[in-house]
Image (cartoon, rainbow, N blue to C red; front, side):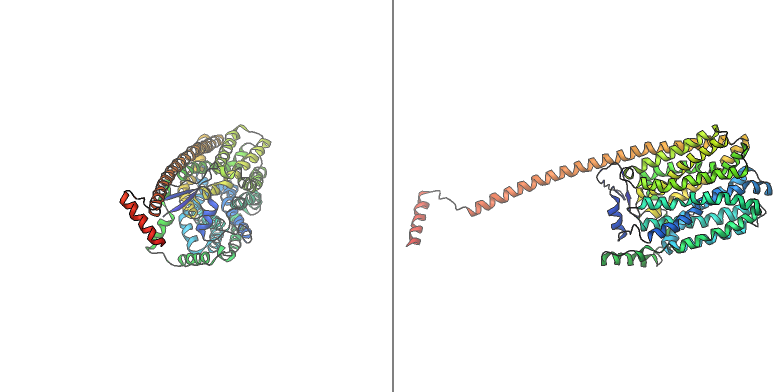
Length: 517
């Protein structure tokens, strides 16, 4: 499967390699040509962003705000901290591991029905989990069923944004990803209120009803082909052929379709591999501080509501940081260097976790929540935009499916590992040290490897330019030589031949005299 890999290094001309990948540094025209139409970059696309804002908000905030119920569930079901941490971990892992399947379903049926189906799965999972009497029962319904629903919401929303937007895509992604902090800011104190009024079982029942709003969000995701005006009959024909292809079963059966969305040839591309490694390091340490932040604050003597408000403060800051980061990333100064900006955001996020164990008062924990929201918002406003920037719109569904299924492993192991550290040491500070160190190392790794990667691309570009210049000069010399030969031959044919002997001269003079007479 040949895909277009688009990169944005430091204002250099295009580079072309002979592999299956084509490196194009001016992504927008090529991406529009590949799609067969120019994305509207507005119009109904903003309603699609609103729907994605809701579905992504539930997808990312739900595993975090469930931590409000963990203490009550732990006491009711007699489970340890590491076992309770598996709830969010399994949910996040299912959300990421279902990426390839979700991508295939989105490609086959479209984003709208998949988001509606995801909302139904999320609502049913929470309602069913409210009747659970064992930790395994909670794992299955909240973790697997609920995580699968969130997976459909996430991938479908990201995919349709990549079809509606191109020039304003960083801004659209930032606004859509802002759904996570908005919902975190609202649902965290709401969950604490519900817990006090109805207990964790009644709270899950109400939360399941709220998550059915994802079905409404899915209804907003109208297919892009209905909203775009085609500039020519050719592009309309291309879109119709693409629709006919999507509405028929591909030849070769399910295995061929699966290979199309689990494209292992991406691993031949160094930029994709570097992004994947750094992203895995971030995901391993990203969620454990959120899951255990309320419990850590309570261990420092903070009351329950104040501890829950730390998540709200983080979400409130994150809510403004994500669209702001999208605007900043869309500027002409940052967008060519967006991969480096992503590395900086990771390092900043990791540094916040390293400082957290040194803070004892509630005021300092509030400051930590503010800076944590800034770092977390920057990373998640850029995390999928960097993948789109690297892979292009055509390859993004395949790439995001592959990335999410690989990231499910660090996602699955991160929070339980942090919970195990708490069970062993009976102190929360070690989990913050662990998560901060891993995330900071991941950001530095991405920064260094991006320098190497773009330096390699620049060398290939220079080598190709030199080869083209040498070939051009050789062709020019050959052309000049051939033009000279043609000119000499033409002149020799037109110019009359001079007589070489006396007899030829006299004979020519006699002929001329006869002609005159």
